Image 1: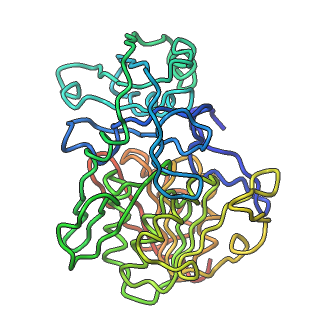
Image 2: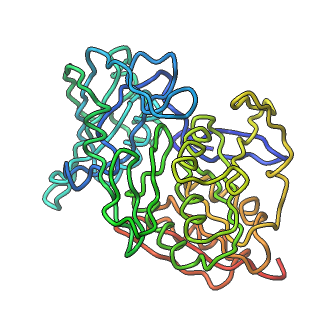
Length: 378
């Protein structure tokens, strides 16, 4: 598998489980390039990383027990502006995160049709080798030449405060809101999902998350059992429960994601028996999470159990693990996959058409979500 996909390799019940991009090799500075800041900063966010390591010298949104915490910021950081062809900007931004960048975003004003290039703005810790990071990132996606870039040393600010100021309540659709933990819901009568994303992906503003939320909003009628395959912040599982699902299960390979999802469940007054979280074993077979050791058993082995299975992850694991993802759904259940661009839909449709019928695709911008019904005779 190409290194440019940046997903963890796991072995669980004979399968490689590739659920979520790994965190950078060292704790990053918190930045205010989160997906929820689009309207306020006119930036198109690609990803943002929040440090939650107790040993981190940088700020954090998560403490060791999964709750929010604020630490003193480091004195400086490196701001790197990279010019690259538009058609590789998403992949290069993703690659930069894998090779040491703490964040990557693209300027909306640079996205006009008047130029074939766009600027990627990224942040690095001073300890990172930017030259090596940019070179490795470019090489990993097949660029022949390393793109031009400028480096500026900037003084660190209170990123926790800035990020919190930039995160606003998000209206997904009528009656469904995503509310940052430190904000007040605009409509207390609505279905409000209280969220502190921490290190995990899933703020409610990214198009793939919104597409999945919209699907669940129309799909959940009450009493369903849902699996969130690659749960991240837990936002989809929490949304399903607050919309009326009977139970939800979230899988993830990252202990920090599990801690974040557990914290968010508590913020929404969801009991642990209603929303179960499973840390998927790595190739060592176990993980330690809050003093528990999880083995290749339990929820991971329970197939054909769920009325709804949703996987908002990455293209390659969706392709490689299609049969594994679908195996968790009951015959006749709904399976939804996202985390893909619109031009990747044909390959996803081709891969899942042997498992699903009545396939439909919803799109938002250049992102897509494919869903269908598991075939009865599969």
